[in-house]
Length: 101
Image (cartoon, rainbow, N blue to C red; front, side, top):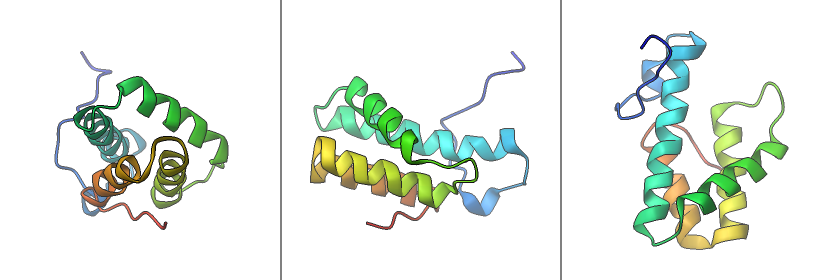
């Protein structure tokens, strides 16, 4: 299937190619890892999904990976607590995406 993207890679920002679909795998992988982290904490994947959707209202059309991850981190902290926010920060940090608390 030509339109599917892998989320189970170890791609980081160091692997960026400047191609939106390839580079999107870095972002999507971070989201996927954070979602799994929520589940490991006993939080629902729906809680993570809702937090991400809520954070997207703080995104601009040119929002960077770092700024978007920071917005998600802050929503996670507010909505889901410090442990959930740490999961988000750590998942994105593993991809080379910096969260500014």
